[in-house]
Length: 261
Ligand SMILES: Nc1ncnc2c1ncn2[C@@H]1O[C@H](COP(=O)(O)OP(=O)(O)OP(=O)(O)O)[C@@H](O)[C@H]1O
Ligand SMILES: [Mg+2]
Image 1: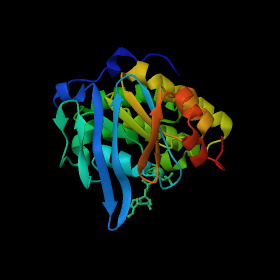
Image 2 (image 1 turned 90 degrees about the horizontal axis):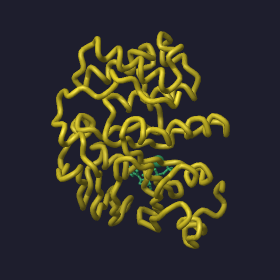
Image 3 (image 1 turned 90 degrees about the vertical axis):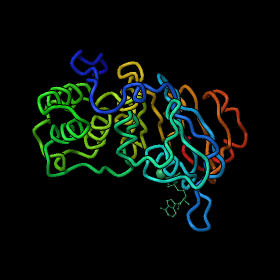
Image 4 (image 1 turned 60 degrees about the vertical axis):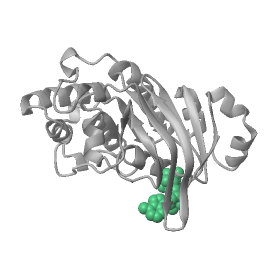
């Protein structure tokens, strides 16, 4: 684990326009999302860059998952827009975000539980245009990297919970996306498991040349591995800055009173 990916995992030039999949930034401009009367997100702007771990934090219901849904085509903004490099993504369906290098994991698994661990990764790779042979090589390299190679033949549904979360991450890294958005990847893990996973997450920018957006409730963890942190509260931006800035921010600390520190 934690080593460089083998050369054959270099993303092959298939399908989407590589100039888009190589976008340097994923930008949110004045985003608002309303569900009937409820303002889930209000006028939020941020820029996720390649080669960084960008922490997105906030209390339950702050709008974190809704923001990730907008950034991946699972939710249409009510106002504002999302730019991938220079491209305005308004109206893009989720598959288009993925084929243009924006990948995600889900708060709840969404694995194909009756398929093998390897097949779970392979179908994503073939879906993105790889031949079955390339998909198999690619999948094995990713499983090796994430520490699941010895379980490649098991059914995904038979994996322990922690391993299912890892598999979700391996799958989202198919074709080395420009950006990967991780929605609470360590939820439900023990401290040791969480620490191990976060070491892997922090190595993603250098290994895959992918920018990481990380939603994580454990403040110590998110402070430890993020280059920058954006704080949402009630759908609004409360603060953005380095972990050191955020830890000094009184309103942020107040929003977190009673949460684990
Ligand atoms: N599809 C939906 N329809 C109606 N309301 C929604 C929908 N999705 C989210 N919401 C509401 O929007 C607000 C933000 O929810 P969201 O799931 O984005 O928060 P979150 O920060 O991810 O919270 P958590 O930490 O619990 O995962 C909440 O009030 C939630 O109930
Ligand atoms: Mg959420």
